[in-house]
Image 1 (cartoon, helix red, strand yellow):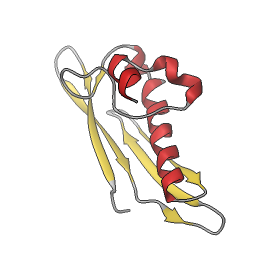
Image 2: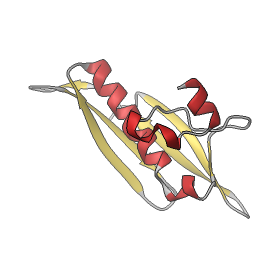
Image 3: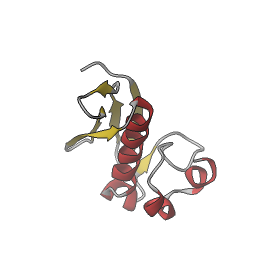
Length: 111
């Protein structure tokens, strides 16, 4: 599958940091909806799924929200070890309204 968008986050550990690779693939038209696949490669597991929408934009938005939900409900987030980039608190992915209270400072401000 051809990668469309990617972001690398890090899980900070005492002795080293490990990559968390997020990939979102191009939306594809289906019979009754559009589908947008995504994948998160954690150091110890891979989580993959797809989102659907009435058009490619909605499918992409739903995929980004699903990725944001996975990141913000992960053990790595709850432990405070997941980071994106220095000087930014958050991961840069939107989440559904029902879990917006989980957003960190910069994500809560900008998303």
